[in-house]
Image 1 (cartoon, rainbow, N blue to C red):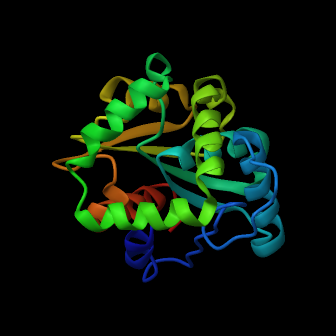
Image 2 (cartoon, rainbow, N blue to C red):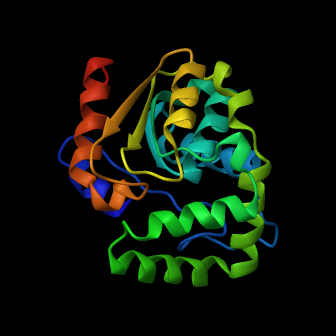
Length: 210
């Protein structure tokens, strides 16, 4: 998310929190599921910022944002959900391994190094457990409870967040819309940060939040 954040800092106050167990955060013994990670994000927002915010998330983070928005609506002014995971018919390890391999050809070499370092920081057991939690989560059951205006962003070439799923997510949100960014795939927060930042700020401006 750093390249996207770098594009946003000239327009807004930007924070990039690490979830418990990931990045440079503390490493709790327990591996948190989606509601647990959403609770942690809500607690962080309530403690550190103490005001409603707009959230921008990529991939699995979209599931966490949806869960938090459904249960803590007063913490969120808007959401940008870039490449939300995962289509109901593809919630198996095999399906996702195939999809991630399909996406890998669109990633620059350095993203592999970044991912490897991230996995080392969180530990492979935590990473695999969290991946399992992402597959058993059902964001489609929560979408109708998200009150905040939300923009679903999909890269045109994204094999992980496919067109039907992106459309389902956008339509399931009470105040949702879908935007397609051409010629990019799933990791567009890194490969197309200018486009994602521009889309986010344009959306927030239309909602009177920027």
